[in-house]
Length: 173
Length: 214
Image: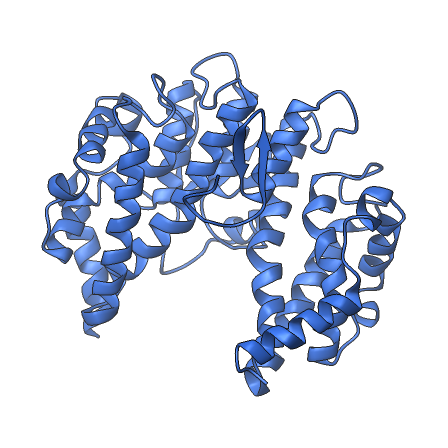
């Protein structure tokens, strides 16, 4: 189903595959367009939403990975960069309940899965996201009140354990 | 439009605007020397071109801008299909081009020796995948020129450069892409935006010399 990248996620709908998570989310939004729109209807707002989801895609995972996969100066640099990324996102959120405004939307969907990784990043990097970006953590907790989110995200402690065992496998202690 | 004549992402936006017949003003940035204060103001996050400024508001990231253009000027020349699965398919390949093609093209055009050779190998293998994906279709989207074609076509003007740098023949490596490139050049939006192969080679060689020889 994904011969090109050989990666998950793959959505198989009517027997046909759709790949790349944000492309899949946009597809879902278009096919099931009758409720809970994830993208705004105004083209400029849509472009802004795509921009910030793309920012999350490009920056968060890679930087977070460097926090747990490196040590010494590299780790410190990754931690600083990660906090910088979170602060930028917090700035973009502002005083809105969600990145989408009043309603949970595309950027919220793009970013919230990383919330269950924060505990691991914080342990490895020795920092607290709540201290650095309190509004962002508030936002994350608000999202966790949604069943769609709380039932989808892994337990942060399990994520931490997963990374510990991954590091062992990679010979990276 | 904050622009640079030799920047592939910027070329994409210009091609899209021309396909739609939109009147625009191009402001060439003096890259890599200096970023204008307007650029820094309009794209504070990435500080990069292209930036489209429409009704005073900035839109950044070339493929996001192309989708925006398609949505705003939706009366002619659609750049994306209407069917959701076909749209996802077009976006998937445009994303592939962004992630694989330009990221391996960069070290080919800016390094030497083993690093360059390894990058060239990767680039050619990715181009072969695109060659197969195109198949016998006139364009990636089928009969109509669209976002995937727009994503890739600026690289076509670098094919001669790749041949010289890699000592290979693109006609042998990915013949369908070569035919596709020529077909795209028949479109005014493309031929009036992209520099020809030789001008591009001269430009890329200059850059390569500065980066590698110094």
